[in-house]
Each structure stands twice: as structure tokens, then as C-alpha cells.
Image (cartoon, rainbow, N blue to C red; front, side, top):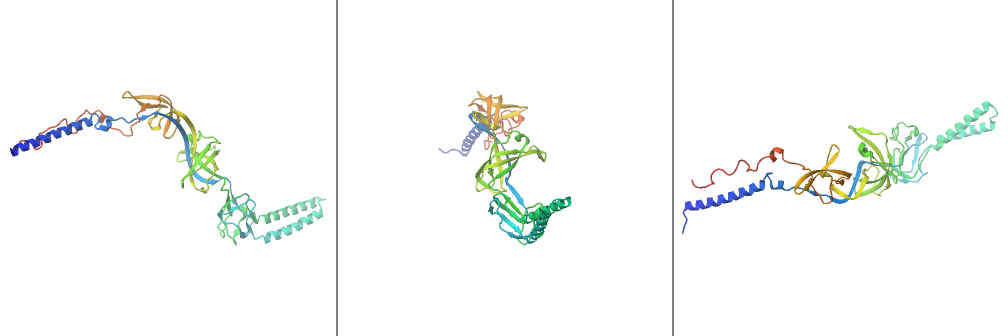
Length: 366
């Protein structure tokens, strides 16, 4: 039997109506009180037993714990330079020397005058005065000759060479030398012991109270992935440095172990462990709220969220020790990162845009 066109239209409309009602019912149950099925699921974290480590960090640049700017003790023309930047030298090794002809001539003259004064004796006041004057002149001329030779005061690495053969040396008196490019206050040769390194980190005033001389530290390097060094605090400056209204204290960390890859000037981060608690109840630090000096968490008990005061112990970056208020295995509800407004939460259950289905069935009869 063939159905009329009108009856086929009514059957089709009926099927569409049932489908729409079913979809609307599903949407209604899914939206529920909060407008989303995800809102009905409470996110929780579990209190566990473990170890909590607290630490403070600071950054700085790698420096040598023993370095020196070396300058000639005399002025004159640079005759020879025996080293270059990067060379390793031993203690007492000659690094450079000046043309010493004039200095040796002055020494010879001073030596003759000194010998004559010794022969004349010191029996009178005048002879004694002449003797002292000649002796001092001889000693000064001797120092002038010795100052033409630059020696390494300790074993280390030449980190900079601020002069050239044929140029002039300004000696230890400072100044500037255009012929060598040597600036005032800069040594002719810079020497550093690369086996003895340090890092000076700036710690905040709250962090520095947790530090003391002798504490061990670990150092990581921005340019050396996976490379770490060990060290210890050797100095805490008593005077703070303030920058952009932030008070910080310079703290020196001397390396106790230096990897071969580490170079002077590299940027590094130092971490000092300030507290450790083992085999304790721990919760994610993000689950704790602190206000007015009181720390609290939200526990999930029998389906209800209960705000509970806790006593926090060692506070790590990721987890915090809980000394009381939470037991191992308890479920906690972390504070929501984002949420709906109170007005949205108080809205009654309803379909968006109105209360129920209105109007006729699309495509239905007349």
C-alpha cells in the first residue's frame, strides 16, 4: 500500500520531533546546575608520603677566585712578550720584559756612589747622611731594573694581553698609553687561576636569612646543558645592594669541583638547599592557601568540601610538608585557577535562551 504524500510528511515530522526532544533532554541533563557536565566533576589531589626539599637560587657569572692585573714596575719600551692570551703559566715564569739598558746604567752609577759612601764611613753626621742617601738611591735603581721584568705571581692562565712589543709601558703608576691601548687601571697582562672559580649571586633579603657560610651549593650553567658543579658559601656580604627597590645581598660561592667545560664569564645559576623533610605527609604547594599567617586546604570528605587549617613545614617549589591537619591519602581540592561568577552559579537550571521548547514542530502540519 502506498502512503499519501501528506501521511509521509506527518511521519517524517514525528520522527524529527522525537529526535529534537531527545537531544534537548540530553542537553538539559548535561548542563545541570553548572551549565556544563565538566562542572560536576571535582578535581582533587591526594596527600602522599615523601620527601620535601626547600631551596633558594640566584644567578651570576663565573669568576676566578684568584686573579691579578699585572703591570711592570718600571716605565719603558716593551722588548719581549713571551705569552699570549690563553697560555697557562707557572709561578715565577717570566711573561714579558722591557728594554733595560737605561735602567742598568742608572743602577751601575748608583752602585758606584753607594760603594764610595761605604768606603767613606759613617763617623760623622754628614758622612752618615751621605751614606743613607747613596744606599737609598742604589736600592731604587735596583728596583727599577727588577721592574723591567714581569713575572707570574702564581700559576694560572693569561686571560688578556693589553700591550705589544715595541710599545710603551706605563708601569704601575696607571695612566693611559695610546701606543699599546693600555688603559688606566688595566694591567699589562691579566692573569687568573682557572682552577679556582667562584660565583657571586644576589639573594633577596628573605632568602639570605636562610643562608650561612659553609653551606653546600650546586651550580648549573646556561650554556652547558646537563653540566653541574658543586661549591659552598664562603662569604655573605653584610651590606645590601638595592636595585629597582629590590634589596639583595651578594653571596660568594666558591667552587669545590669544576667541570672541564666551564669557562670564565659564563652565566650560571646557583641553588642552595635550605631545608629537607623526609618520610612526611606532602601535598602540592598549589593546594595550600595562606592568608593572615594561617595556611588552609580544602578537603573532600563524604562528597563535601571542608576548609581545614594546616600546619605547613618545609616548603618546596612543587610540594610542601604538612605537619598537622592532613593525613596520607586525604583528597584535597586545589583552588580553581578560573571560575564562573557567583551570579552565573546562582542561575536556575534551564535551557539557554528561555524556559522549554516553544513553537510548533518545524515542518509540521499547517
